[in-house]
Length: 571
Image (cartoon, rainbow, N blue to C red; front, side):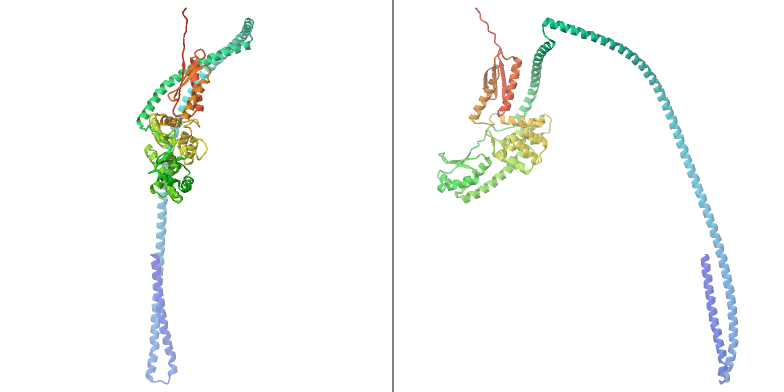
């Protein structure tokens, strides 16, 4: 408000100033006219009269202007005074309002402070009351604890008194015991001297004799205990194992025929033999150099034999020769073309065979190279048994037995399916097929438990898991069942002779008979030289030596027969 009044007063003063300037200009113009009158003396009389009247009018205007200026100055002064009064009043009122507002704010602050102080005081009082209550409770607990400690101290003091009394008693007893020990030592020494004089033996000699007697008795007792434990374990274990194995065999349907390892190719006529040989043997030499397989052409009508230690190479050669015979064009360039095509076809068959094996056994995904190596076993045989079919059959058996034993079948089946993996590379890499297969499985990321089952299935490594043992059992069941495998007559006879020789070398053995195609050995012993305990140990030793020295399918049972005969002569 005061600002508006000041602005209004300023506008009024500016207006008065403008009016004053206009009046001054009018007065100056009248003075100019009066001054110019004398210089115009020669003009006419009418102009002189007009000039005489104008100074009087100008003077009147000057008086009016002066009056107006004074009035304007008075009004401006009055307006300034009023503006100053209004501004002063407004300033005083603003100061009063500011003072009042400050007082109100101060009062509100004081009120808020008072309320906050009251709240803080209330909270402090509550905390003090809570602390006092807690202190009282702690004092009560401390008092109770002190009472219990005092009671315990009394009990401890009482027990300390008892212990001290016992210590005195024990000290007295120890003294008495020491005295009696000294008496016993003296008596023992006297008894020893008496015994030495009576038996004419020193203490060392008597002790050695006693040790011999005790050792013999301990050995006999240990042998009896071992026999009883093994008999009990055999009764329970054989019953359970027989049940599991029987169930597994019943659930796996297997072929009982064996596969031949000789590749025979039938020809449409004997004239084809000449075309296979070629001019001066060119075709047969080229065929053998390309395929690495020996071609045997003899008097067998309309047939040729393919001989090679590598079954995959032999299968490639067979497919190549079948294509050449079917086409009729046989020459070196054609042989190379058909060999390349047959090699690709066999590789594809290996992959399909490996994939089919995974599907049949329900094994999860596997590295492609492992699948390819597994499929190559389709063309490998062991004692006439197809290795891939043996692996599939063993995997089914191991999975069934694992399920019966509450073990995860998937892991056991996977290890059993791969246990003969090394047989695909035994002619390419040195070492036993178990260790070769384990190294291949480890290289392609198989689990260590599966690797262990592979390397331990022929005891090159001691089995450390149930899965490895199940792999061994499934392998033996699949290879030992009737009709599964066959071996040459020469190796069969040598194995039987060695079995009888191992048992016949033992002392006290009278006769040895290898029975049931070498699956059972009956050892007849002299009853006067071998007792029942020694017979049990003899059977175990013979079985252990057979396991260490011989390779055979299935299991061999060793039976020791001790016949006791009582002979009397009637006269």
